[in-house]
Image 1 (cartoon, rainbow, N blue to C red):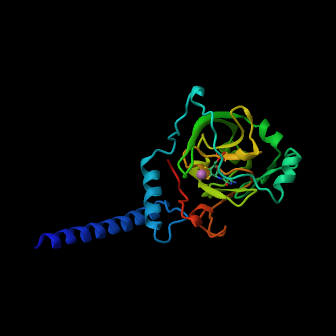
Image 2: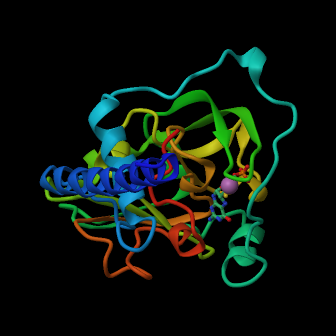
Length: 251
Ligand SMILES: Nc1nc2c(c(=O)[nH]1)N[C@H]1C(S)=C(S)[C@@H](COP(=O)(O)O)O[C@H]1N2
Ligand SMILES: [Mo]
């Protein structure tokens, strides 16, 4: 066998093994319910592998790193400005007195919280890093109520597979129940000790420190507990996969 040929055989062999590996991984992932909503298409097998491996290898309770207050960043970049049209400017000028966070879907009791009502629930703070897919990050202190607290109050069904966050713009997203129940996943209303500014998601945003920044949906308005995301948007679990990013953005 010539050198070239053996190398080609090796490469093809490697590719075939790689593809077979992905298929096998996808099969295992499916058996354990570890298929992400954006499993289809060219990148689908890779997305499935990433998500399934993360869920296999990283323990459910693993925590995003927390920092001392000395590490809080002085510069806090913004990605996604508040909507200039629609209800947002009106809610903002009324200082969010008319804003509500609605909890719906697979819950025993659908609920609706005003900002003051959310602020009366048990509060928690975390100093974590927010990392944007565009390549920047900053450390900030976030205060809010654990999403798990709200899921408990509303009585989230054990059939639930996802929590979908609908904002007042179009950047909706969803997380699986492991992240939804995770103690660091917050419905946050303050950053570095102050009310959220509109740029950072006022009045309330999701904080999912174990994933990239886009999962931390700002300008939150509605939370849906569901067993499928197929019927939302293009069925990929988030607007992000429509633009080529992963639904699962664990870091
Ligand atoms: N509703 C909504 N949430 C959003 C966005 C957005 O455009 N709209 N941008 C996301 C992205 S890409 C990132 S990195 C973070 C940025 O949060 P920050 O502006 O507070 O830094 O918010 C995320 N949440
Ligand atoms: Mo981002």
